[in-house]
Length: 154
Image 1 (cartoon, rainbow, N blue to C red):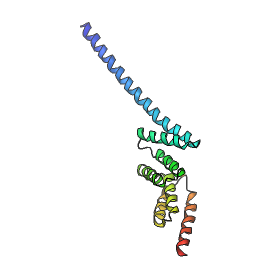
Image 2: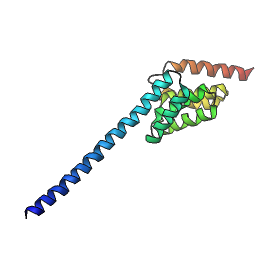
Image 3: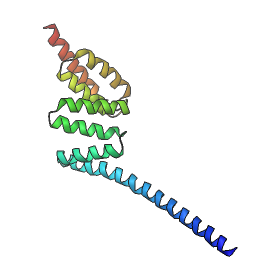
Image 4: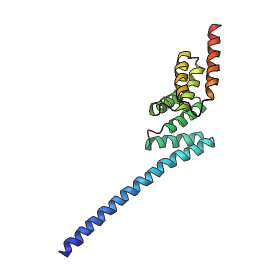
């Protein structure tokens, strides 16, 4: 009888050990995800664009729904003058987080550069609804819209 109890105790002990290892691995993986984003942001702030791009992309591998990583990648592609990749990352960020006002504002600027009046108008209406941090940019957008309108009249 003692052998059965000892054997059951041994199995139970192993089971708890496996569960403990599993929980610890989840916790360390979560820290790794956060580390990639934080390290990438530091690199970005230091203008180390290639290194930060790599880390933001790596963060997306571990956390594909992180809209903020896509926004930062868009900023990097803007710096590199790669509008196609910039737009792609902004659109992805907006799919994940439709109220991301920074992504909306950056997309509005792309459309302003192209003088795409109708798209700017649609995006700026959405922007006015969701803005909280970038509300001071609404006047700037409206001024640029008026400039585009004035150019069309001439």
